[in-house]
Length: 175
Image 1 (cartoon, rainbow, N blue to C red):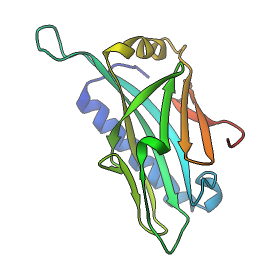
Image 2 (image 1 turned 135 degrees about the vertical axis):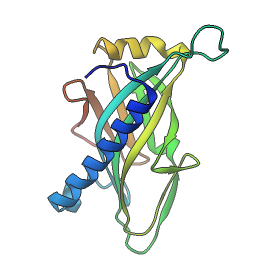
Image 3 (image 1 turned 60 degrees about the horizontal axis):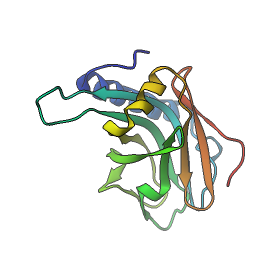
Image 4 (image 1 turned 30 degrees about the vertical axis):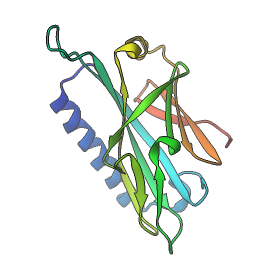
């Protein structure tokens, strides 16, 4: 997979990935066991990731940045209550130990994860690397970066980015 693409291609690919992941769940007859570990009333399953750089060009007044997108599926296990969490405390991305800012995504409303009772949703979370983190993108491009996504509040679950297939592998134990 080429690590460089334009914004339109990125958005089309992200939408296709989200649709494919949700259709896989529908066709596979999702059970509670395949959506992730119970993280205190909800589960999260982490899927594919991608990173796309944007160079705004010299003289535009805008600097370089890259968007790191990850597909996630969330299931609220409570059939009587919804919930609302500040997503920045639930989803934490670190590349080579450096935290990357959560930018948004179609699962979020004002950077907040809001779920209705019993709801299951699949979507994209976007993290933004700024110009000071360009070296992290370059390490990902060279496939040498250590990518960790921590999900949950207490307990938490950590996933490690895998370059083959651009997916995540769940680390074995809850923290």
